[in-house]
Length: 347
Image (cartoon, rainbow, N blue to C red; front, side, top):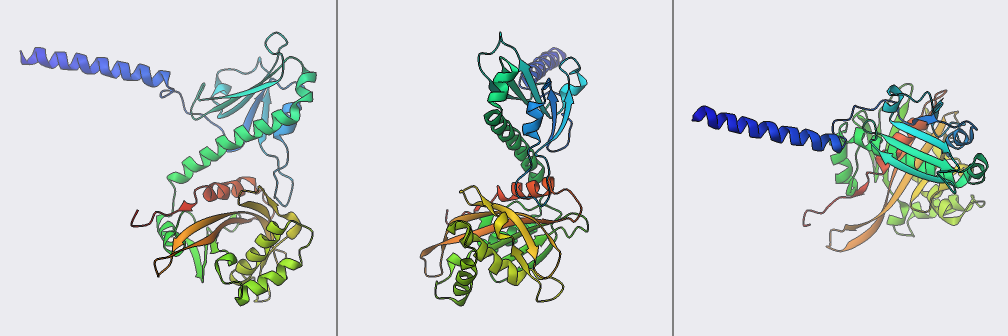
């Protein structure tokens, strides 16, 4: 009887495992692992070269031209089983019977995982050409969103927890900090973290915006004078540049005290949602590179039990002379996307 009972249990377990396997397979759980580097795209069937052109648009905010994506091309006939395991695939289909107008849609984990497959369809090459600007914007958005998710999945498991606790203690924020950022410098309302790489130096700085201090403070007055010298961009960007140049100028110095970090004003771009990007320079030196910044308005408690609104700025900047910087600055942008207000102990 015991052996029969054991056999029944084994049979039931086998059936459950089979059911689990079928469900997992259906949900993509048993799909092979995809291949490909970050921001690499396999382009299929783009005979006219239109889609390649929108994938190769230069990334904004870099000191030298760099394409949005590294593109490999293959014909529809050559798109075989091995190539289907690529992580990012864009398939172009010109077919008058299948489409009445240009369309774009994306799928996840079709032949491998993680994977993004984008389908672009049009009734004719001319119809696609007439819509290529809007199609291109949508295509870059879909692929950038996918790559940002990939960056975050990598960052989730490779973090400097000690530095994260320090950022929380100093500024009341949660922030995922890469594990390789082990060098640090602290100042008043300021934290600088770096990987100190000799070839691809990546940095994160966190500071309180000058809006957090009294307007009569010498710091605010100093910034106001600096801001007035930048008259050819919008007032919001002038505000940002003034605060940035003050905080980073006094905390990030060059070989001598007369050398300090500053912003290249005409390079600054903003999305209107607290994100800025542009170029930094070291006054009196030839150093420079790209930066990306995010400002978050936080409601934080004071000692008296009241609450005050403070602007917390997190910035990533890169120094890598002679190197491409697209992937490095996008990695830091992923860090910025993890920024949020830390929960209070009484919550």
